[in-house]
Amino acid sequence: MPELNSDREREQEAGDGPSPIESALRGANFRTILEGIVRDPAILKRIVGVALRQVHEVENLDRCTPHSFISCVLEAATLGLEIGINGECWMIPYETPRRSGSFVAQLQIGYLGHLALAWRSEKIAGLQCDVVCDGDFFEYQKGTDGFIRHRPKDGRLPSRHNITHVYAVLKTIYGGEIWDVYDVTQIEQIRQAAPSGDSPAWVDHYGAMARGKMLKQVVKFAPKSREQATAVSLEEQADARLSQTFTHDVSAFTSIPARTTRGATIDEARGEAPARDPEPAKPREAEAQPAAKAATASASGAPANTSPGGGATGPTSGAPTKATQSKLGW
Image 1 (tube, one colour):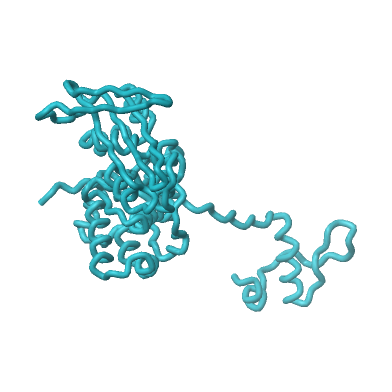
Image 2 (cartoon, helix red, strand yellow; image 1 turned 60 degrees about the horizontal axis):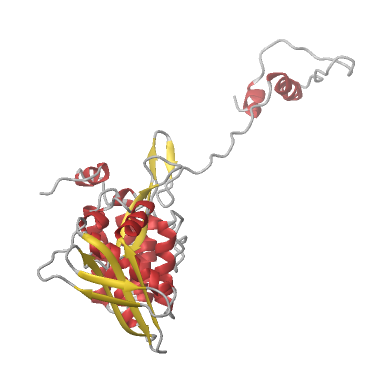
């Protein structure tokens, strides 16, 4: 049995029930939106299954707010990409800077995701993207007479340690050609600036991530489909450490349960405690005493005490009657 990667999974194993994310994935609200995106029941079931598997396989993903997690799943389904299966896209948890221990999930589009979206577009006629390694023949020139010439070395195995350049060439149906080249220094600058720079995606798939960044660069300047524009926007927001703007509004997920910790109820959807209503101020003893005495005097038939100079005063000693106790709620 695999080792449980979080306290929440240990709680689930102990029989405390599903996590808020799992409850949201199986909820009616999520299914209603997903059925509007995916018509095939088999694909719908697969999307939910893949998302559940990601919760248990990706460290800290189970600690993300359900709203951010669900938004990533729905956006990937809208783009027609699978999360974490073949490098099309990933969900990456980021710790929120203002709340230690609170995470949000962001959708990272991979090289194969950009490639799939480009080939689906009716505006793209041709596409090539590759990395250059030590020992390859490679030369290029930019400008009006620009060109790229690349002859890979036989038997090469691209890795983080031998990649020297990455390039992409995109041809449109209108006859235009858009291309660009990055050297390894530029690739490293992009990786180090991105919040996902040390994520498993970059560690285990360096070449694919470099291709993805290069492909996104040329797609930005090409005529593109709505899905391509969305993918480029999401990745730029993630790289700039901004909140991502998703297609679907999931604020209606009001059925997500809350958890209580240290006396405060935490909203699992947003990962924060709601503001408490201020407690009503208690009346001062000096202000409450005349009202109590007036009620006592009224019940006993005696005139009420008043402030000095305010008229007659009544008796102030003696225990209140049962009727007085009843009216005062004693």
